Image (cartoon, rainbow, N blue to C red):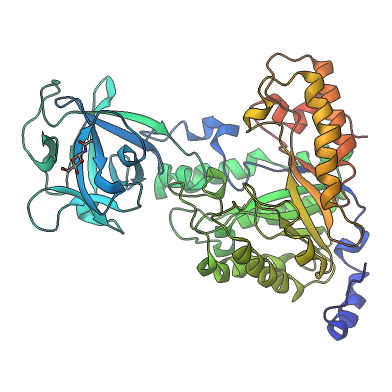
Length: 501
Ligand SMILES: *[C@@H]1O[C@H](CO)[C@@H](O)[C@H](O)[C@H]1NC(C)=O
């Protein structure tokens, strides 16, 4: 590889340092593991983290549908938003689904499918509309749940009065009565049809008084020095550490995020150095969300990463690169995790990758720079020619035998064949002799089969190790710890499902 063809003069200077530091002694391909759910929380991996949150089923991004018990119809944002709220739907879909923004454990905003917020009409009529792009007092509602029947609710508006269903098309906030009968126009049944358990939800759910302690306890206990010793002595050579954008604002990130993840990352570098592991910093959650998933730390599931997000995100990369460039444990920085096509366009992504790459190269010529392929409908080779012009660039692909109907009904052997044949050729297609290196940055020995034997799992894991072992930069298992055994590489190693040494 031609390392320094872009900035020959600067490169010559930097190369003097390079032999002393970091990525020079990187032994490729890496065998690594993701420290998922550590510095970016994902509730499904450890749900008990959320246990002490009051009204923990009503977190930011929870999707609810509301039905008037009197009219037996669903509430709907007419036209999806920018209009009145009506009560004339017998079935519920997008326009009948509201996403919560949690103000406190009882107070919420309701965001409709076109992204406006439900609120009191500004015309002083007490009519309920979905008109505003940003929520204020008149868009804030108290949800009152019935004792013992929490999905039977009444909704109090900012004027102190309750919402009532007057007719199919008239929803007002002017009811002063109380009662829980079906015939009461202020009673609604609430159905939860989706929820998120990410870093935004846990931080805002516990709130500013409790979240700092909860998250500090989690960060201090979930991954410790002992884990680095374990990883090193069991054949791993690197860790991929998902981080969120707020790490760059430590110790006082914008609410509701909580400081302290930077200290945890510093610790990881110290332990990595001590046990001879390399660190891949993975910017997993960016401001505005690149995929709408809870692991992007989205508030409500809307993907809004675009050209206007690039500068802020590059600043996060710049911060991380500056801080860790000279640390001998730094192996690579991944610029963004799993951007989704088509909402994140290829042009936007390339603009971001170019700027992020340049930010890293201000501080180090030896660290690798990892570019995540887009998920969704995107050509798997779309970044190859772009990356060819960059020194020490790596393409990250994620291979799960899940999340697609295609895998339902696959037998054990079909799953194993799929790895050798399909994944083998997928990986070969992006692994070119003169292009970027390749990295299977996420995979797991889990599948859509229930009750498979240990031997089945063993063969499935081995197939993936065989094939992903051909990735020129390496691979990373998802994850190190998880409530589900097969998702925990620690458990898989301790129980002899996977052997790396
Ligand atoms: C619901 O009411 C609105 C407003 O009057 C109307 O435009 C719409 O067609 C109605 N929808 C149904 C399904 O009745």
